[in-house]
Amino acid sequence: MMKFFEEHAPFITNYWPFIISSTFICLGLFFVVMFVKNRGRYIRVFDKENDVGSNIEEEVGETNDQVFMSIMKNEDVQIPYALPRLQPVAMIQKAQSFYELMNTRRSCRMFSDEPVPREVIDNIIKAAGTAPSGAHTEPWTYVVISQKDVKMKIREIIEEEEEINYRRRMGEKWVNDLKTFKTDWIKPYLVEAPYLILVFKQTYGLWPNGQKKTHYYNDLSVAISVGIMVSAITNAGLCSVTSTPLNAGVRLRDLLGRPVNEKCVILLPVGYPAKNAKVPNLQRKPLKDIAIYC
Amino acid sequence: MMKFFEEHAPFITNYWPFIISSTFICLGLFFVVMFVKNRGRYIRVFDKENDVGSNIEEEVGETNDQVFMSIMKNEDVQIPYALPRLQPVAMIQKAQSFYELMNTRRSCRMFSDEPVPREVIDNIIKAAGTAPSGAHTEPWTYVVISQKDVKMKIREIIEEEEEINYRRRMGEKWVNDLKTFKTDWIKPYLVEAPYLILVFKQTYGLWPNGQKKTHYYNDLSVAISVGIMVSAITNAGLCSVTSTPLNAGVRLRDLLGRPVNEKCVILLPVGYPAKNAKVPNLQRKPLKDIAIYC
Ligand SMILES: Cc1cc2nc3c(=O)[nH]c(=O)nc-3n(C[C@H](O)[C@H](O)[C@H](O)COP(=O)(O)O)c2cc1C
Ligand SMILES: Cc1cc2nc3c(=O)[nH]c(=O)nc-3n(C[C@H](O)[C@H](O)[C@H](O)COP(=O)(O)O)c2cc1C
Ligand SMILES: N[C@@H](Cc1ccc(O)c(I)c1)C(=O)O
Ligand SMILES: N[C@@H](Cc1ccc(O)c(I)c1)C(=O)O
Image (cartoon, rainbow over all chains, first blue to last red; front, side):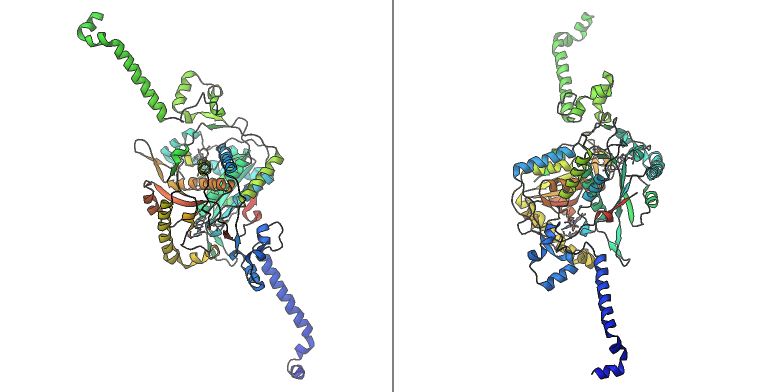
């Protein structure tokens, strides 16, 4: 047998340690690359921060082979879901305080230039990133601007487009419907506010191989995420205005170097209201005019 | 002069006290009716609860005539806007806790039938009603279902339509993209959850005279409002799923007797997760994959 190999494949008998070790090295490299590419998509069995994930093995109670399979397709595992229990009185109290907090929110168009901690902005975006999304596609990109020169360029683009909007594109009726808000195309807040957050929706995604990935209900998903962001901004004691700079989307996307599958949906300046900030004295509809009970 | 009246209009000289007093009574009644109809749309100068509104006269510093004019068009008055000030450390802390709270949210499709206090649902909807909206049009109607028989009818409609969705309308690719969620057209949660909230967007409004009122960006506005509602549900320690029952909108609208300008956008069951509730082990994108800083 040995002789047969020596005769017909002298290469193998001479170099077998080299062949075997390089095979193992290649296999190892393959697994490392796979792991890095899918990082965060594995069950983190040893992640002590993540209580739900850390007990997966016991919870699901699968054999070792099955656990290996689910490591490969972690998202397909079903994990138990529970929430800390509130007593009715506490729950009513919490729900009412939250309403009262949200009810302090107003669209603010006059900002102080006082700085806001970056960690606060980070957490506001992280909150927005917890939003539900069609088929869990997370079709959003938040671009945060704090550099003065970038803010100035954004202001320039928006004021240019908004002037045309007010003069021609919106028409008399729309401009008239905005009278209450005393808005026009001059937008100093775009430079005054310490941060501008531009929300882009990804109309589709891209798989690693370049194929298009369908983003189901991407407009709904992104707007729900903006709603959570607005709640987070209000919770932090900051203010903003959910503005829609008509016709400026492509120029803003190009300025910020965003790809063509992304569309600017909403721009929010974020910061403290200016000392002399004013808002129109709007009233909100009472519950009975927005809710119907069956 | 008196004689002239006595001769030509004896009615007036005999009954003038009656005429004058009834004129005043009619005028008084007219103002009372106007006031009741527009309640909440006036500046509440004497409303001690509303600190911002209560100082209008001093703040704006207008003459009495101008104040009267603004009472007639209250929304056009600009009032000062300020927010309670948080210190940086407290703000960072608050923003982080809010993120952590929101990050406990998962789309839940298995509910306990345990009741939830009505006041909690009221406050959740009131929170949603504080959302910003294009030109302050508040283009939303929330229909809350708690009656078992109505829930059963809704389940019937949705299961019928969803079966066709899964079998034919969504197509193989979409159904495949949902595999992770283990969903199908059987939806017991539509009866189990103590409440269903159906969110309708008003594609346009109606003025009292029947004319159409444009609801600018109504889809964006309603979805942002749903985002605040999702935050409020999570804050109350409850759970839901922002479901989009494809093709069932018109049948649901007809069942609930909503007008043709309203379109069902999203249906949320609301309640406690079932004891044995499970959710797919999804991971959310980390901050660095959703935020870009300039
Ligand atoms: C616009 C939108 C539509 C959705 N439609 C449905 C639906 O019809 N049925 C359903 O079960 N879940 C639906 N979902 C929930 C998503 O499947 C869910 O948010 C996603 O899987 C992420 O999971 P998570 O919410 O637990 O983070 C929808 C979510 C959004 C934002
Ligand atoms: C979808 C949407 C688009 C909006 N677009 C603008 C805008 O372009 N510019 C602006 O100043 N405000 C904009 N707003 C803010 C509204 O004018 C504001 O929400 C409304 O007047 C109600 O006031 P409040 O937010 O203070 O309750 C927008 C709001 C929404 C929801
Ligand atoms: N509406 C169907 C299918 C469905 C499910 C989840 C999801 O994220 C999406 I987009 C669609 C259903 O409710 O089953
Ligand atoms: N985008 C313009 C006009 C505007 C303003 C407010 C508003 O609610 C809506 I809808 C539009 C601007 O920002 O001035």
